[in-house]
Image (cartoon, rainbow, N blue to C red):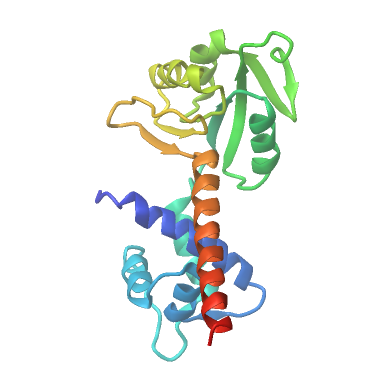
Length: 219
């Protein structure tokens, strides 16, 4: 089976969300429209969709429902895929709320904590266990995806537990790079770094606007 680049997979998720919003409004969509919504080129969109083996027509573009079906068949599991989350503090609880019922075939089946006041009970509908039992719970439930929402200094320890238990994909919310085997995919979500970048470019835009106003005032 040919490996699809992770950036292409990421764009498929973006197309899926755009098409879901469009589904109730129109039956067909052109590549240039998808491209404008995704901030890409029409050529890039067409190249990506060729991976799915589905083509549109020059007259009407892509059938929205059929394109959604092809993306969902490619992107989403046909049977339930289970997820574990380590850390049910503020970020962990927000993630449990966010993902609840969002994608029926992806379910957070277990959460883990070091704090005895939090484990051995349900947290937002998800059973919470001691991190000491992570390996056995993950193997017993057949969990393949892990979310790390623990303090930075604990992230690698949790990642090692996840990998040893057979997890093959990790979403990392800690601000520390993880060491993982080549066959384990790691996605780093650094909210603080994203905020720093956005704030920087906002300041640059304000400076640019101020300079333009200053030049106009001296004409």
